[in-house]
Length: 251
Image (cartoon, rainbow, N blue to C red; front, side, top):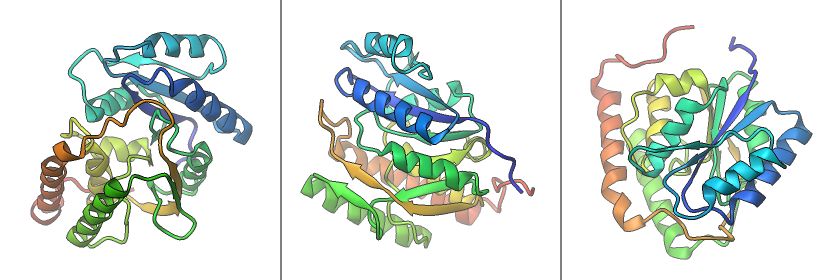
C-alpha cells in the first residue's frame, strides 16, 4: 500500500511568459486552496528575456504565497527546465503543467485524488470520453494524433495522449525514471513511457485543454520529430533488451 501523500509540487517551465503567468498562477492557487490540496508551485524561469522573473517575485510576495520561483541558469530547453523544477521541488507527488493556462487546475486536483488512491502515475487524455480541446490548431492536432497512434502501437498500450506534458507522478516514480535524457519537449514522452516500461502503476482520466491566450507557443513541430523518435526508440530498446534492470523495486 502506497504511503499517504503530503505535498503536491506543481512544476511549470516558463520562458517569456510575463502575460500568461499572473492569471495562470492565481487560478491555480485559488483552485488548489479551495480543494484543500497542500501544494507548492515551482515555476522555472528558463532564460526569459521579458519580465517573467520580476512578475514571479511580485506574485510570490502578493497573491500566490505558495509560489517558489527558481531560475535555470544553465543550458535552456523545455526538458531541462522541467528537470530543474523537479530537482528543486519538495513534494512527494508532482504534476507538470504549462505556464499558458492551457491545463485545467481542476484536472490537477483530480490527479492528486487519483494519486492518493495509490497509483504511481496519472495520465490525462484529451481524446477520451469526457476530454475536451478548445481552439486546437488543425495541423498540430493531426500530427498529434499520428504521433500518439504510433506510440500506442509501438508500446502496445491503451494510452492515447502520451505526448501531452500534463501528467502527475509520485516522487518515487519520478526518481525511478532517472536519468532523464530529453532536453526538449521529448521529455513529455520520456517520463510516461519509462514509468510504464519500468512497471510503475498508472491510470488515466479525461482532461481538458485550451489554446493559450497570450504569447506564442514554444513547441516547434519541425524540430521535434527526430527527437521524439529517438526517445521512443531508446525506451523501446530498454523495454525489450534491458532484462528488467530498471524495473520498479518490489514493495
